[in-house]
Length: 287
Image 1 (spheres, one colour):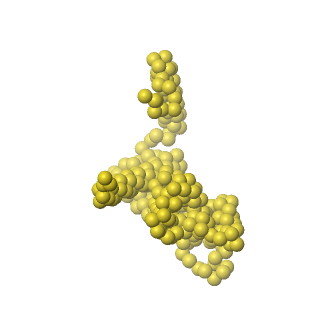
Image 2 (cartoon, one colour):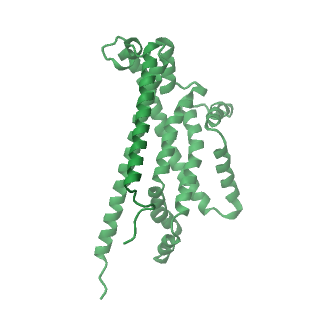
Image 3 (cartoon, one colour):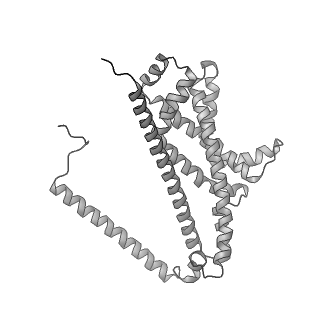
């Protein structure tokens, strides 16, 4: 029987070394956290005056502050949802266009992708807010942020999906053509669904980046979650506490996004397996 792992099973000495190393690292991290808390306590950063408006519902400022922050969080989620949806749609279209484009105009598609990949996202947002009004396209501020985020992230998603399609075995498309499927059917029914499933971790990571990049809306004066937090800091003078809570909220939202994506992947995998089983049961058994 061959070993199914890429390395040998650790022996007793290796296990002891791993245990001692893990224990040492854990103790060092706990010591660092304790030292940080002690230092913060000495500087008055752990008082109820600093944390109360953020975590104490009985505090007089709690409801007003979270109503203010909640408005920014809602704007952040709205912009992120729009940018994610548009980036996925446009990115998929760009990936398919680059794969199926003829040689005489492929350079234009590649040029657009490489141009937008090379521009920092903050510049894309700034140009959307400054150039579009000069062209007579006046939009709400939120849409300039959505356009900038979409322009950058759609080409990244396009490259992720293109890599996923190109990584599939050639036999997938050859078998589809052999049973009479057309090129469009092969792309949308065979290759693209598999590319989405295989590249889902990378897509999730990019969608998380979209959500975090909404904080760049400050360059065009858009008051999203982080900007609202900055305004509240000016009144309450608690930057450590406010940014810590904002970071926790982002972590929770991003974790929820990743769990939804994992759930969707499992559902798609089970549906594909059920479909394959049903098809196998319908096929006549040869003698």
